[in-house]
Length: 186
View 1 (spheres, rainbow, N blue to C red):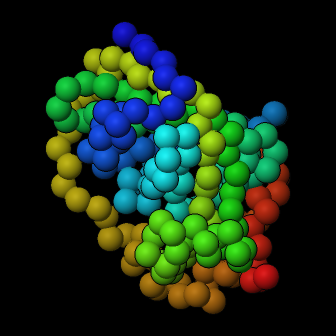
View 2 (view 1 turned 135 degrees about the horizontal axis):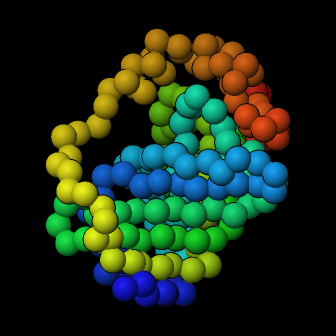
């Protein structure tokens, strides 16, 4: 049954650490709801009420647009092996752009200081509520590993190609909202 917490407990942090994927959900007034899968290697939990994830270039940039317009963000984790459980982190999020001093500071503090090719922002969630639920309906799956596709795509595009892609596909959402993605460093 569902239980609510004001922040992450050590047991909940351990549950998150065992997962291989999480999902982000966001929306803005009048927009479509966006749900995206993310690999947990990009996730950091610097304290009990903050979650960060390093966001790399992809097909769109919906979450960044929604953070600018509304700020509501939910991260969901679910157990695909072991005991069933779903965990959601609800709160307010914002995009920290690749070109900012804050991005560089977060990168240094939580990601070893080096941004992988295609890094465009770090999403920062200030957690307001943590909720667990049973997860009985989540099927069992076996983890085989990460796909090389995104790394290969970034390498094939190169830095200039990625910036051109940002200009073409990542400056506005599918609903026409600005994402705030900068094409130039500060």
